[in-house]
Length: 420
Length: 150
Image 1 (tube, chains in turn cyan, yellow):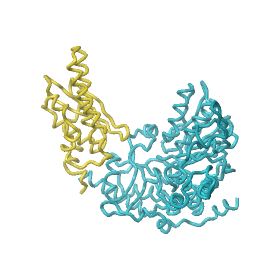
Image 2 (tube, chains in turn brown, red):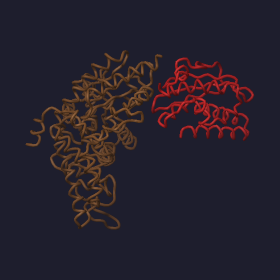
Image 3 (cartoon, chains in turn red, blue):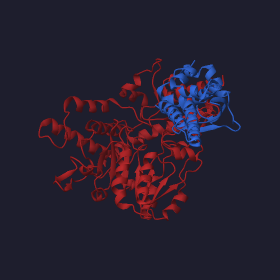
Image 4 (cartoon, chains in turn orange, blue):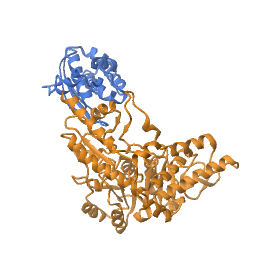
């Protein structure tokens, strides 16, 4: 708890100074323009601490974990398990054994749908989701209810991008077995009132899975305080390497769940016709994992905790407020989606009237500005707002207001190209 | 100046040629790139193996719509066989700008949609005739569409 208090007390974040931690930020594009990276919701950039952690494993103690009886293997196992402890600390999990390493949030949700879902969802059972889910927190449940003849229900999104909790309350009367929702929307940026939503779900007898992919690197997350049952997130969106991610679940849930994948490391004893499972979390980590990536994810967790997640949240709230003020003022006709800065993370989705987002992104690219254009894996949410696609700028700890100014100038150029 | 957004491309995007609904088309197909939301409906009037008229409707990015405008200009008056022989490279030459890999699907949607319309038409003909020659031309057209989705 002392660590947590120290985190909370952290001072303001200095994005200009910490940008030197990210080597890629000193690179330029093919026209010599410096990188303006505004696609952090897709994947984040990596600081030196993470790059060096991955490099250190590959250069100095590359070896398999949980097996070798020699120094290198012991070092690898130690670093891998230390990364698990760091990841647990980042979300204040009660114990590292409740952290299952996976490739990303998508794999974590599939793990729960396959393992917990197949055993607990049956004919006529309901799962409540929301209209703002990333496809990763939608399609695995579609597959599950198709197989089990269950039902999906959806909490609608209001015009200003908030979940309609009055409808959520009504849906809970259906006595769902599971409620699954995103902590923060990757398109609207909406930060959902997850703690309240968990309480409501539990009162209705449902378990809760929270998709934290867009929340963990941007704000303090405490799974014990939230009271969630499952919490999933990706390492690569939190300054860690691709191929790293985590599922957190309460011990008794993990212990009751059957394995997701089978193979080495997940077993205690193997006979030709039957096997006994290993203890958690190893029961869910069949085969050699992405050791280097998970070690990198541990380094990313340390980096974020050192910055202080309250400071990170303050920084990104300020940036979002600035973007919501500057873009409509400097870019006439721009349409912005999503709620006010108070209720959203560092995500701003928009459209320029009559210009397809792909064209917007392509023209910005010449100025070295990277944004996302498309449906951001949220097709139902785009349908809800009657949009074929949108453009999205998203921020992280290294984003500076000057980059939002560059975006505004770039968007004016886009309008100029199309108006000429 | 952006290479991709030359004046003539933007001109075709703003005022596309052959844009609108064709009365009584003999072949038509709605093609889309669900990932970007580009959508094109191609309507063709085929007579004696010749594209007598063609029109399209749709919405999407500048590249996809300008490509459809240029392609419809190109194929009007050509024989169905000539159109079926058109390759993605032929269309890219017609567009005349360098298309990045990520935008290839946008650029080639128009040709893909025409190929589907012709393949459907050929399949219908084959069914009506009960002949094998119609089926042969259908598979030729769909292989063109397969190549364009690469």
